Image (tube, rainbow, N blue to C red):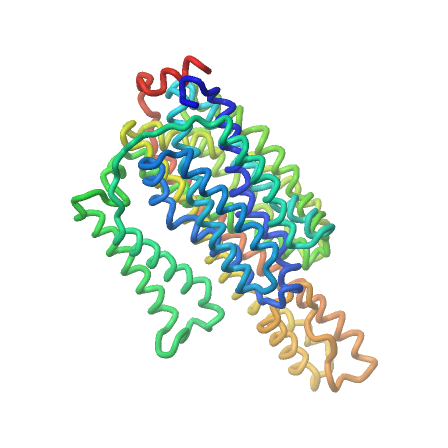
Length: 536
Protein backbone atom coordinates (compact mmCIF):
# COMPACT_ATOMS: atom_id res chain seq x y z
CA UNK A 1 0.00 0.00 0.00
CA UNK A 2 1.33 3.46 -0.90
CA UNK A 3 0.28 6.94 0.14
CA UNK A 4 -1.97 7.26 -2.91
CA UNK A 5 -4.04 4.26 -1.84
CA UNK A 6 -3.98 4.88 1.92
CA UNK A 7 -6.67 6.56 3.97
CA UNK A 8 -4.57 8.98 6.02
CA UNK A 9 -6.95 8.96 9.00
CA UNK A 10 -7.09 5.16 9.10
CA UNK A 11 -3.30 5.01 8.92
CA UNK A 12 -2.91 7.63 11.64
CA UNK A 13 -5.42 5.83 13.88
CA UNK A 14 -3.49 2.57 13.52
CA UNK A 15 -0.23 4.32 14.42
CA UNK A 16 -1.86 6.10 17.34
CA UNK A 17 -2.91 2.79 18.92
CA UNK A 18 0.73 1.75 19.23
CA UNK A 19 1.70 5.27 20.29
CA UNK A 20 -1.00 5.16 22.99
CA UNK A 21 0.38 1.88 24.34
CA UNK A 22 3.97 3.08 24.67
CA UNK A 23 2.97 6.38 26.29
CA UNK A 24 0.63 4.52 28.64
CA UNK A 25 3.63 2.68 30.03
CA UNK A 26 5.29 5.94 31.06
CA UNK A 27 2.60 6.50 33.71
CA UNK A 28 0.85 3.18 34.38
CA UNK A 29 3.64 2.03 36.69
CA UNK A 30 3.04 4.92 39.12
CA UNK A 31 -0.16 3.47 40.57
CA UNK A 32 1.50 0.11 41.14
CA UNK A 33 4.45 1.51 43.13
CA UNK A 34 3.16 0.57 46.63
CA UNK A 35 2.24 -2.94 45.42
CA UNK A 36 5.63 -3.48 43.77
CA UNK A 37 7.41 -2.19 46.88
CA UNK A 38 5.68 -4.88 48.92
CA UNK A 39 5.65 -7.82 46.51
CA UNK A 40 9.13 -7.36 45.07
CA UNK A 41 10.61 -6.49 48.48
CA UNK A 42 12.25 -3.41 46.96
CA UNK A 43 12.93 0.13 48.10
CA UNK A 44 11.67 3.35 46.53
CA UNK A 45 14.91 4.01 44.67
CA UNK A 46 14.77 0.63 42.89
CA UNK A 47 11.13 1.13 41.91
CA UNK A 48 11.83 4.63 40.60
CA UNK A 49 14.45 2.96 38.39
CA UNK A 50 11.66 0.83 36.92
CA UNK A 51 10.20 4.12 35.67
CA UNK A 52 13.44 5.89 34.83
CA UNK A 53 15.18 3.09 32.90
CA UNK A 54 12.20 2.85 30.55
CA UNK A 55 12.30 6.58 29.90
CA UNK A 56 16.10 6.51 29.53
CA UNK A 57 16.22 3.73 26.93
CA UNK A 58 13.21 5.35 25.27
CA UNK A 59 14.92 8.74 24.94
CA UNK A 60 18.54 7.94 24.08
CA UNK A 61 18.07 5.88 20.86
CA UNK A 62 15.24 8.00 19.45
CA UNK A 63 17.36 10.17 17.18
CA UNK A 64 19.06 7.05 15.86
CA UNK A 65 15.63 5.47 15.33
CA UNK A 66 14.46 8.39 13.23
CA UNK A 67 17.49 7.82 10.95
CA UNK A 68 16.58 4.15 10.70
CA UNK A 69 13.11 5.17 9.57
CA UNK A 70 14.55 7.42 6.89
CA UNK A 71 16.81 4.66 5.58
CA UNK A 72 14.68 1.51 5.85
CA UNK A 73 11.17 2.99 5.87
CA UNK A 74 9.17 4.22 8.87
CA UNK A 75 6.61 1.41 8.65
CA UNK A 76 9.23 -1.32 8.91
CA UNK A 77 11.01 0.31 11.82
CA UNK A 78 7.68 0.97 13.57
CA UNK A 79 6.64 -2.67 13.21
CA UNK A 80 10.01 -3.90 14.51
CA UNK A 81 9.71 -1.64 17.54
CA UNK A 82 6.15 -2.79 18.18
CA UNK A 83 7.24 -6.44 18.24
CA UNK A 84 10.13 -5.67 20.62
CA UNK A 85 7.86 -3.64 22.90
CA UNK A 86 5.15 -6.30 23.06
CA UNK A 87 7.55 -9.16 23.81
CA UNK A 88 9.35 -7.05 26.44
CA UNK A 89 5.96 -6.41 28.09
CA UNK A 90 5.57 -10.17 28.50
CA UNK A 91 9.05 -10.31 30.07
CA UNK A 92 8.12 -7.50 32.49
CA UNK A 93 5.03 -9.35 33.69
CA UNK A 94 6.98 -12.56 34.24
CA UNK A 95 9.77 -10.87 36.21
CA UNK A 96 10.23 -12.26 39.70
CA UNK A 97 12.69 -9.66 41.00
CA UNK A 98 13.09 -5.92 40.72
CA UNK A 99 16.44 -6.38 38.93
CA UNK A 100 14.80 -8.53 36.24
CA UNK A 101 11.96 -6.04 35.91
CA UNK A 102 14.41 -3.15 35.41
CA UNK A 103 16.18 -5.12 32.64
CA UNK A 104 12.90 -5.92 30.90
CA UNK A 105 11.77 -2.30 31.12
CA UNK A 106 15.04 -1.24 29.47
CA UNK A 107 14.26 -3.46 26.46
CA UNK A 108 10.69 -2.18 26.44
CA UNK A 109 12.02 1.37 26.18
CA UNK A 110 14.14 0.42 23.16
CA UNK A 111 11.02 -0.81 21.37
CA UNK A 112 9.23 2.44 22.18
CA UNK A 113 12.18 4.44 20.83
CA UNK A 114 11.92 2.67 17.47
CA UNK A 115 8.20 3.43 17.20
CA UNK A 116 7.75 7.03 18.30
CA UNK A 117 9.65 9.06 15.64
CA UNK A 118 7.80 7.23 12.88
CA UNK A 119 4.35 8.39 14.08
CA UNK A 120 5.14 12.10 13.82
CA UNK A 121 6.98 11.61 10.52
CA UNK A 122 3.85 9.96 9.08
CA UNK A 123 1.73 12.97 10.07
CA UNK A 124 4.01 15.21 8.03
CA UNK A 125 3.89 12.73 5.13
CA UNK A 126 0.17 11.95 5.05
CA UNK A 127 -1.25 15.42 5.71
CA UNK A 128 -0.47 18.70 3.90
CA UNK A 129 0.51 21.63 6.17
CA UNK A 130 -2.98 23.19 6.00
CA UNK A 131 -4.56 19.99 7.36
CA UNK A 132 -2.03 19.00 9.98
CA UNK A 133 -3.82 20.81 12.82
CA UNK A 134 -6.63 18.22 13.19
CA UNK A 135 -4.11 15.39 12.74
CA UNK A 136 -1.92 16.88 15.45
CA UNK A 137 -5.08 17.24 17.54
CA UNK A 138 -5.76 13.50 17.32
CA UNK A 139 -2.12 12.71 18.03
CA UNK A 140 -2.03 15.10 20.97
CA UNK A 141 -5.33 13.82 22.32
CA UNK A 142 -3.92 10.29 22.32
CA UNK A 143 -0.74 11.48 24.04
CA UNK A 144 -2.68 13.39 26.69
CA UNK A 145 -5.11 10.57 27.41
CA UNK A 146 -2.35 7.96 27.59
CA UNK A 147 -0.34 10.06 30.02
CA UNK A 148 -3.30 10.47 32.36
CA UNK A 149 -5.30 7.25 31.95
CA UNK A 150 -2.30 5.12 32.94
CA UNK A 151 -2.89 5.51 36.69
CA UNK A 152 -6.61 4.65 36.32
CA UNK A 153 -6.04 1.49 34.29
CA UNK A 154 -3.06 0.59 36.46
CA UNK A 155 -5.13 0.93 39.62
CA UNK A 156 -7.89 -1.37 38.36
CA UNK A 157 -5.40 -3.98 37.18
CA UNK A 158 -3.35 -3.90 40.41
CA UNK A 159 -6.43 -4.23 42.64
CA UNK A 160 -8.06 -7.07 40.71
CA UNK A 161 -5.28 -8.96 38.93
CA UNK A 162 -1.92 -7.88 40.38
CA UNK A 163 0.83 -5.51 39.31
CA UNK A 164 2.05 -7.94 36.62
CA UNK A 165 -1.06 -7.18 34.56
CA UNK A 166 -0.06 -3.58 33.96
CA UNK A 167 2.38 -5.21 31.52
CA UNK A 168 0.36 -8.25 30.36
CA UNK A 169 -2.38 -5.90 29.13
CA UNK A 170 -0.01 -4.76 26.39
CA UNK A 171 -0.04 -8.19 24.73
CA UNK A 172 -3.53 -8.09 23.12
CA UNK A 173 -3.19 -4.37 22.40
CA UNK A 174 0.17 -4.95 20.74
CA UNK A 175 -1.20 -7.74 18.54
CA UNK A 176 -4.14 -5.59 17.39
CA UNK A 177 -1.84 -2.60 16.76
CA UNK A 178 0.48 -4.84 14.73
CA UNK A 179 -2.33 -6.13 12.51
CA UNK A 180 -3.79 -2.66 11.93
CA UNK A 181 -0.39 -1.19 11.10
CA UNK A 182 0.31 -3.94 8.56
CA UNK A 183 -3.08 -3.41 6.88
CA UNK A 184 -3.63 0.35 7.11
CA UNK A 185 -0.24 2.09 7.13
CA UNK A 186 1.38 2.71 3.72
CA UNK A 187 4.90 1.40 3.17
CA UNK A 188 6.42 4.84 2.65
CA UNK A 189 10.08 4.73 1.63
CA UNK A 190 11.88 8.08 2.06
CA UNK A 191 15.06 6.31 0.83
CA UNK A 192 17.40 8.82 2.41
CA UNK A 193 20.87 7.30 2.66
CA UNK A 194 21.99 8.37 6.14
CA UNK A 195 25.25 7.62 7.85
CA UNK A 196 25.07 6.64 11.49
CA UNK A 197 26.90 8.81 14.02
CA UNK A 198 28.23 6.09 16.34
CA UNK A 199 30.40 8.41 18.51
CA UNK A 200 27.41 10.74 18.91
CA UNK A 201 25.15 7.88 19.96
CA UNK A 202 27.68 6.62 22.53
CA UNK A 203 28.47 10.07 23.98
CA UNK A 204 24.82 11.13 24.31
CA UNK A 205 23.71 7.80 25.77
CA UNK A 206 26.57 7.48 28.27
CA UNK A 207 26.35 11.14 29.26
CA UNK A 208 22.62 11.09 29.93
CA UNK A 209 22.90 7.78 31.79
CA UNK A 210 25.61 9.14 34.11
CA UNK A 211 23.63 12.31 34.88
CA UNK A 212 20.43 10.38 35.60
CA UNK A 213 22.26 7.68 37.59
CA UNK A 214 24.03 10.26 39.72
CA UNK A 215 20.97 12.40 40.38
CA UNK A 216 18.61 9.52 41.09
CA UNK A 217 21.03 7.58 43.31
CA UNK A 218 22.39 10.63 45.11
CA UNK A 219 20.17 10.19 48.15
CA UNK A 220 20.83 6.44 48.17
CA UNK A 221 24.60 7.04 48.46
CA UNK A 222 24.12 10.05 50.75
CA UNK A 223 25.74 12.15 48.00
CA UNK A 224 29.08 10.53 48.80
CA UNK A 225 31.02 7.61 47.33
CA UNK A 226 29.16 5.35 44.91
CA UNK A 227 31.87 2.97 43.62
CA UNK A 228 35.15 2.78 45.52
CA UNK A 229 36.67 6.27 45.44
CA UNK A 230 34.20 7.53 42.79
CA UNK A 231 31.61 9.93 44.20
CA UNK A 232 28.11 10.74 43.03
CA UNK A 233 29.14 14.24 41.98
CA UNK A 234 32.01 12.84 39.92
CA UNK A 235 29.54 10.58 38.09
CA UNK A 236 27.28 13.54 37.38
CA UNK A 237 30.28 15.63 36.31
CA UNK A 238 31.44 12.89 33.94
CA UNK A 239 27.97 12.76 32.43
CA UNK A 240 27.89 16.53 31.89
CA UNK A 241 31.39 16.38 30.35
CA UNK A 242 30.28 13.68 27.91
CA UNK A 243 27.18 15.68 26.95
CA UNK A 244 29.38 18.73 26.29
CA UNK A 245 31.71 16.54 24.22
CA UNK A 246 28.63 15.30 22.34
CA UNK A 247 27.58 18.85 21.43
CA UNK A 248 31.13 19.71 20.32
CA UNK A 249 31.30 16.55 18.23
CA UNK A 250 28.01 17.50 16.56
CA UNK A 251 29.50 20.91 15.79
CA UNK A 252 32.63 19.56 14.12
CA UNK A 253 31.30 16.32 12.62
CA UNK A 254 31.41 16.99 8.86
CA UNK A 255 29.62 13.82 7.80
CA UNK A 256 26.09 13.54 9.19
CA UNK A 257 25.77 14.41 12.88
CA UNK A 258 23.15 12.73 15.04
CA UNK A 259 21.92 16.14 16.20
CA UNK A 260 22.25 18.71 13.38
CA UNK A 261 22.77 21.90 15.37
CA UNK A 262 21.66 24.00 12.41
CA UNK A 263 18.03 23.06 13.04
CA UNK A 264 18.20 25.00 16.31
CA UNK A 265 18.72 28.23 14.37
CA UNK A 266 14.95 28.10 13.91
CA UNK A 267 13.54 30.01 16.88
CA UNK A 268 10.28 28.06 17.04
CA UNK A 269 12.05 24.75 16.96
CA UNK A 270 14.51 25.70 19.71
CA UNK A 271 11.79 27.15 21.94
CA UNK A 272 9.41 24.26 21.23
CA UNK A 273 12.06 21.69 22.04
CA UNK A 274 12.80 23.34 25.39
CA UNK A 275 9.08 23.56 26.09
CA UNK A 276 8.75 19.86 25.29
CA UNK A 277 11.46 19.07 27.87
CA UNK A 278 9.56 20.94 30.57
CA UNK A 279 6.28 19.23 29.69
CA UNK A 280 7.91 15.79 29.84
CA UNK A 281 9.52 16.68 33.17
CA UNK A 282 6.23 17.84 34.72
CA UNK A 283 3.92 15.14 33.40
CA UNK A 284 6.25 12.36 34.50
CA UNK A 285 7.24 13.93 37.79
CA UNK A 286 3.79 14.87 39.07
CA UNK A 287 2.46 11.31 39.46
CA UNK A 288 4.97 9.77 41.88
CA UNK A 289 4.30 12.12 44.84
CA UNK A 290 0.58 12.20 44.06
CA UNK A 291 0.20 8.41 44.11
CA UNK A 292 2.25 8.07 47.31
CA UNK A 293 0.11 10.74 48.99
CA UNK A 294 -3.24 9.35 47.82
CA UNK A 295 -2.54 5.70 48.62
CA UNK A 296 -0.24 5.85 51.65
CA UNK A 297 -1.63 8.92 53.44
CA UNK A 298 -5.28 9.08 52.42
CA UNK A 299 -5.57 5.28 52.39
CA UNK A 300 -7.20 5.00 48.97
CA UNK A 301 -6.91 1.83 46.89
CA UNK A 302 -5.03 1.79 43.58
CA UNK A 303 -8.36 1.78 41.75
CA UNK A 304 -9.66 4.78 43.68
CA UNK A 305 -6.41 6.65 43.22
CA UNK A 306 -6.73 6.00 39.50
CA UNK A 307 -10.35 7.15 39.49
CA UNK A 308 -9.27 10.47 40.96
CA UNK A 309 -7.35 11.08 37.73
CA UNK A 310 -10.25 10.04 35.46
CA UNK A 311 -11.93 13.50 35.20
CA UNK A 312 -8.57 15.04 34.34
CA UNK A 313 -8.04 12.37 31.68
CA UNK A 314 -11.45 12.89 30.10
CA UNK A 315 -11.12 16.67 30.06
CA UNK A 316 -7.66 16.51 28.46
CA UNK A 317 -8.91 14.09 25.81
CA UNK A 318 -11.98 16.18 24.97
CA UNK A 319 -10.11 19.46 24.72
CA UNK A 320 -7.13 18.20 22.66
CA UNK A 321 -8.87 17.75 19.26
CA UNK A 322 -10.68 21.12 19.51
CA UNK A 323 -7.44 22.88 20.36
CA UNK A 324 -5.80 21.11 17.42
CA UNK A 325 -8.35 22.59 15.04
CA UNK A 326 -8.11 26.00 16.67
CA UNK A 327 -4.33 26.00 16.32
CA UNK A 328 -4.76 26.28 12.53
CA UNK A 329 -6.85 29.44 12.92
CA UNK A 330 -5.41 31.37 15.85
CA UNK A 331 -1.90 31.92 17.13
CA UNK A 332 -0.91 28.59 18.65
CA UNK A 333 1.47 30.34 21.04
CA UNK A 334 -1.47 31.76 22.98
CA UNK A 335 -3.05 28.31 23.32
CA UNK A 336 0.25 26.76 24.37
CA UNK A 337 0.97 29.39 27.03
CA UNK A 338 -2.55 28.97 28.42
CA UNK A 339 -2.01 25.20 28.62
CA UNK A 340 1.38 25.42 30.33
CA UNK A 341 0.16 27.98 32.84
CA UNK A 342 -2.97 25.92 33.60
CA UNK A 343 -0.97 22.72 34.14
CA UNK A 344 1.47 24.53 36.45
CA UNK A 345 -1.45 26.12 38.33
CA UNK A 346 -3.24 22.79 38.71
CA UNK A 347 -0.14 21.07 40.13
CA UNK A 348 0.46 24.02 42.46
CA UNK A 349 -3.13 23.91 43.69
CA UNK A 350 -2.79 20.20 44.50
CA UNK A 351 0.26 21.03 46.61
CA UNK A 352 -1.69 23.79 48.34
CA UNK A 353 -4.78 21.66 49.04
CA UNK A 354 -3.05 18.46 50.19
CA UNK A 355 -3.50 17.70 53.90
CA UNK A 356 -3.00 14.49 55.84
CA UNK A 357 -6.69 14.44 56.86
CA UNK A 358 -8.13 15.69 53.55
CA UNK A 359 -10.83 13.99 51.49
CA UNK A 360 -9.24 12.72 48.29
CA UNK A 361 -11.98 14.23 46.12
CA UNK A 362 -11.08 17.74 47.25
CA UNK A 363 -8.18 17.42 44.79
CA UNK A 364 -10.59 17.17 41.82
CA UNK A 365 -10.89 20.92 40.99
CA UNK A 366 -7.10 21.28 40.92
CA UNK A 367 -6.70 18.15 38.81
CA UNK A 368 -9.32 19.46 36.36
CA UNK A 369 -7.31 22.64 35.93
CA UNK A 370 -4.26 20.49 35.19
CA UNK A 371 -6.28 18.36 32.75
CA UNK A 372 -7.43 21.43 30.86
CA UNK A 373 -3.82 22.53 30.63
CA UNK A 374 -2.74 19.19 29.17
CA UNK A 375 -5.48 19.42 26.57
CA UNK A 376 -4.18 22.81 25.46
CA UNK A 377 -0.51 21.85 25.24
CA UNK A 378 0.26 19.07 22.79
CA UNK A 379 -1.33 20.13 19.49
CA UNK A 380 -0.10 23.75 19.38
CA UNK A 381 3.31 22.76 20.78
CA UNK A 382 3.79 20.12 18.07
CA UNK A 383 2.34 22.27 15.31
CA UNK A 384 4.40 25.37 16.12
CA UNK A 385 7.59 23.40 16.55
CA UNK A 386 7.46 21.09 13.52
CA UNK A 387 5.54 23.22 11.00
CA UNK A 388 8.23 25.90 11.02
CA UNK A 389 10.98 23.43 10.02
CA UNK A 390 12.09 23.03 6.42
CA UNK A 391 10.49 19.94 4.83
CA UNK A 392 13.87 18.25 4.25
CA UNK A 393 14.58 18.40 8.00
CA UNK A 394 11.18 17.25 9.27
CA UNK A 395 12.28 13.66 9.93
CA UNK A 396 15.28 14.78 11.95
CA UNK A 397 13.30 17.51 13.69
CA UNK A 398 10.51 15.13 14.72
CA UNK A 399 13.09 12.78 16.24
CA UNK A 400 14.70 15.60 18.22
CA UNK A 401 11.33 16.94 19.35
CA UNK A 402 10.11 13.57 20.62
CA UNK A 403 13.48 12.87 22.21
CA UNK A 404 13.30 16.17 24.07
CA UNK A 405 10.03 15.25 25.76
CA UNK A 406 11.37 11.87 26.80
CA UNK A 407 14.61 13.40 28.08
CA UNK A 408 12.43 15.72 30.15
CA UNK A 409 10.60 12.68 31.47
CA UNK A 410 13.86 10.97 32.43
CA UNK A 411 15.10 14.07 34.25
CA UNK A 412 11.70 14.56 35.90
CA UNK A 413 11.58 10.99 37.16
CA UNK A 414 15.12 11.20 38.55
CA UNK A 415 14.83 14.68 40.08
CA UNK A 416 11.40 14.14 41.60
CA UNK A 417 12.42 10.70 42.87
CA UNK A 418 15.51 11.96 44.68
CA UNK A 419 13.72 15.04 46.06
CA UNK A 420 10.85 12.91 47.33
CA UNK A 421 13.23 10.48 49.04
CA UNK A 422 15.11 13.33 50.70
CA UNK A 423 11.94 15.10 51.83
CA UNK A 424 10.42 11.88 53.19
CA UNK A 425 13.43 11.25 55.41
CA UNK A 426 13.61 14.86 56.62
CA UNK A 427 9.87 15.51 57.02
CA UNK A 428 9.06 12.28 58.86
CA UNK A 429 12.03 12.79 61.19
CA UNK A 430 10.88 16.35 61.95
CA UNK A 431 7.30 15.22 62.55
CA UNK A 432 8.51 12.44 64.84
CA UNK A 433 10.48 14.91 66.95
CA UNK A 434 7.42 17.13 67.29
CA UNK A 435 5.15 14.20 68.17
CA UNK A 436 7.64 12.86 70.73
CA UNK A 437 7.12 15.99 72.82
CA UNK A 438 3.84 14.55 74.09
CA UNK A 439 5.58 11.46 75.50
CA UNK A 440 7.47 11.28 78.81
CA UNK A 441 10.97 12.68 78.39
CA UNK A 442 12.81 9.36 78.72
CA UNK A 443 10.88 7.90 75.77
CA UNK A 444 11.13 10.84 73.38
CA UNK A 445 14.53 10.16 71.84
CA UNK A 446 13.97 6.40 71.24
CA UNK A 447 10.57 7.15 69.68
CA UNK A 448 11.92 9.83 67.32
CA UNK A 449 14.94 7.72 66.36
CA UNK A 450 12.79 4.66 65.67
CA UNK A 451 10.50 6.59 63.33
CA UNK A 452 13.42 8.30 61.57
CA UNK A 453 15.23 4.99 61.02
CA UNK A 454 12.07 3.42 59.61
CA UNK A 455 11.69 6.34 57.18
CA UNK A 456 15.32 6.03 56.08
CA UNK A 457 15.49 2.28 55.59
CA UNK A 458 12.19 0.66 54.72
CA UNK A 459 10.81 2.62 51.79
CA UNK A 460 7.43 1.13 52.69
CA UNK A 461 4.94 3.93 52.23
CA UNK A 462 2.12 1.95 53.69
CA UNK A 463 4.23 1.62 56.82
CA UNK A 464 3.46 3.51 60.00
CA UNK A 465 6.93 3.23 61.42
CA UNK A 466 8.10 0.53 63.81
CA UNK A 467 5.44 -2.03 64.65
CA UNK A 468 6.38 -1.73 68.34
CA UNK A 469 8.54 0.44 70.59
CA UNK A 470 10.56 -1.74 72.97
CA UNK A 471 10.67 -0.48 76.53
CA UNK A 472 7.43 1.48 76.43
CA UNK A 473 4.92 0.73 79.19
CA UNK A 474 1.73 -0.87 77.90
CA UNK A 475 -0.22 2.28 78.79
CA UNK A 476 1.89 4.38 76.41
CA UNK A 477 2.14 1.85 73.57
CA UNK A 478 -1.21 2.78 72.01
CA UNK A 479 -0.43 6.49 72.21
CA UNK A 480 3.00 5.92 70.66
CA UNK A 481 1.51 3.94 67.78
CA UNK A 482 -1.05 6.69 67.10
CA UNK A 483 1.70 9.31 67.16
CA UNK A 484 3.77 7.17 64.79
CA UNK A 485 0.91 7.00 62.28
CA UNK A 486 0.41 10.77 62.48
CA UNK A 487 4.15 11.40 62.09
CA UNK A 488 4.43 9.24 58.97
CA UNK A 489 1.27 10.63 57.38
CA UNK A 490 2.14 14.25 58.11
CA UNK A 491 5.71 13.70 56.91
CA UNK A 492 4.62 12.02 53.66
CA UNK A 493 2.12 14.81 53.03
CA UNK A 494 4.74 17.49 53.52
CA UNK A 495 7.18 15.60 51.28
CA UNK A 496 4.59 15.26 48.51
CA UNK A 497 3.60 18.94 48.72
CA UNK A 498 7.17 20.21 48.50
CA UNK A 499 8.06 17.76 45.72
CA UNK A 500 5.05 18.80 43.60
CA UNK A 501 6.37 22.36 43.52
CA UNK A 502 9.33 21.21 41.41
CA UNK A 503 7.39 20.18 38.26
CA UNK A 504 5.18 23.27 38.64
CA UNK A 505 8.26 25.50 38.72
CA UNK A 506 9.84 23.77 35.72
CA UNK A 507 6.67 24.46 33.70
CA UNK A 508 7.21 28.19 34.23
CA UNK A 509 10.44 27.82 32.26
CA UNK A 510 8.31 26.27 29.52
CA UNK A 511 6.02 29.32 29.59
CA UNK A 512 9.01 31.62 29.06
CA UNK A 513 10.23 29.49 26.15
CA UNK A 514 6.77 29.39 24.54
CA UNK A 515 6.45 33.17 24.70
CA UNK A 516 9.39 33.49 22.30
CA UNK A 517 7.69 31.41 19.58
CA UNK A 518 6.24 32.93 16.41
CA UNK A 519 3.29 31.90 14.29
CA UNK A 520 4.80 29.98 11.35
CA UNK A 521 4.32 31.40 7.87
CA UNK A 522 1.99 29.29 5.68
CA UNK A 523 3.73 26.93 3.26
CA UNK A 524 2.36 25.55 -0.02
CA UNK A 525 1.51 21.85 0.16
CA UNK A 526 4.54 19.65 -0.51
CA UNK A 527 4.23 17.58 -3.72
CA UNK A 528 4.76 14.31 -1.83
CA UNK A 529 1.74 15.04 0.32
CA UNK A 530 -0.63 15.84 -2.55
CA UNK A 531 -1.93 12.27 -2.97
CA UNK A 532 -2.62 12.08 0.73
CA UNK A 533 -4.49 15.35 0.55
CA UNK A 534 -6.61 14.04 -2.30
CA UNK A 535 -7.51 10.89 -0.39
CA UNK A 536 -8.43 12.89 2.72
